[in-house]
Image 1 (cartoon, protein in one colour):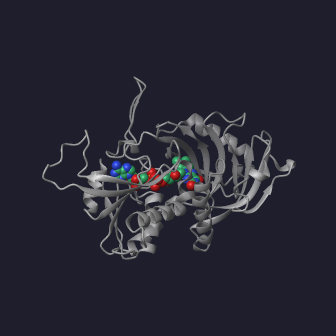
Image 2 (tube, helix red, strand yellow):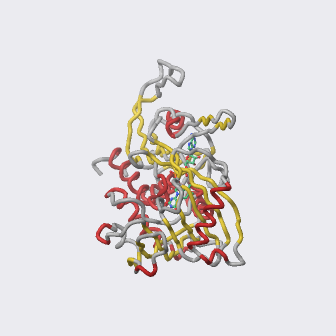
Image 3 (cartoon, rainbow, N blue to C red):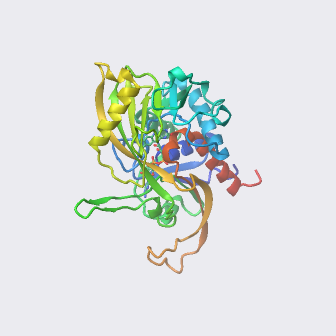
Length: 381
Ligand code: FAD
């Protein structure tokens, strides 16, 4: 990348997307100066204001085939598979059940995961119509995010803990020759719950002045973290089974470490910003999972915590694209800029809205962002 030594890239956001993007950028262009600015950093693992600490996190196929998403997730699957020897990632035998017969030709991920097979009828749990088995990967966000940060520390990446209100603020940190990567997930949101009036007040990535993307929305995920050494398989009943209430699913994700840790879920509640634990839901999750995995009934099993996180989703899918802004930023929400200040164009590359699949798309998404950066700034290289 010509001029890479003078290029300053500011990554706004320190979730799995921001960190992985900085990792790919610093691998491809070791001379590039990189700063990460974020309200929540990888040691803020108990903050509910970002999504990454609360993920499963495994690679699990979701939805129909989409070319772009496939490329992103295939790259990530292969990268995570290669990381197994590090101990940060484990292989995970898996079974997923469906409410309809599966059409083997439409299973877009069957050549990507390992050991894929359609379950014979006698192995399909009651309530489901069909199922598949395969080997995938999982990781523990509580270990993986600090690992990403430590990698970046050794590469000289600077971290600044700061909440910003506008894209212009980050552009100032980057300087006139800088670039911003906007990896803010749901972005800045605050929730005022006035139970009496049943009024929920919230703002999202949509609230970052300059971006204000109204397509961004949360998918609430409530889970239980357990020590359950009797559960060694990723098991999943999807949404929509008659026995599963709307907005809920049934899944168990064993983690690589600490040994025996399993994330048990869960909910997929769209447009729900509630960060408190609903114990009726917790009870329902636990009893559905017990039915699916008798190993959860082991006398050694212990509940380690109840969690709620918000998946940063976006109507229309994740946004990975370049946008040029005029600086200083003009907005009805900001004071008028100094008329003497010289205007200049400023590049922002957006990378947000990954919903339930931020980990499993992270390495592919990061490659895409860096490709866009290079193609936009240095099209002839
Ligand atoms: P985030 O992790 O939300 O990070 C956003 C960053 O931007 C943070 O650093 C935040 O502080 C910063 N930021 C935002 N606004 C501002 C601001 N105004 N100023 C400064 N900083 C700001 N994904 C999978 O792939 N596999 C799974 O198995 C899986 N399971 C999940 C289970 C649950 C229960 C949940 C909740 C999520 C799950 N996910 C899973 C989804 C995954 O967690 C998200 O897709 C991913 O974490 C999104 O990462 P991100 O970096 O885009 O956003």
